Image 1 (cartoon, one colour):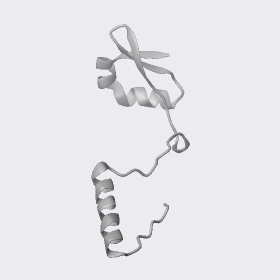
Image 2 (cartoon, rainbow, N blue to C red):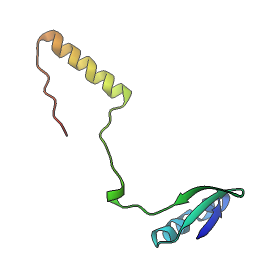
Image 3 (cartoon, helix red, strand yellow):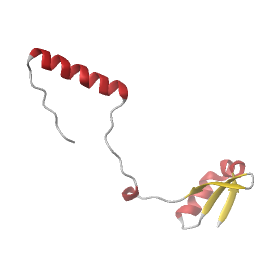
Length: 79
């Protein structure tokens, strides 16, 4: 296991990521406290979901309201 302070991690982040990718446990410390870990991930580890920002959602609802007022149908497609 490799332990590095945040200051050390800032200076050697690329090396620490390479070591984690190679299977080494890398723990980040603030003073004497363990605060985070660097670990490798794969595409399967990441789940991305489609999300709208508040602004995008507001625009969508405005469009739906306009279409409803016009009597038009709004087609929604699931991604």
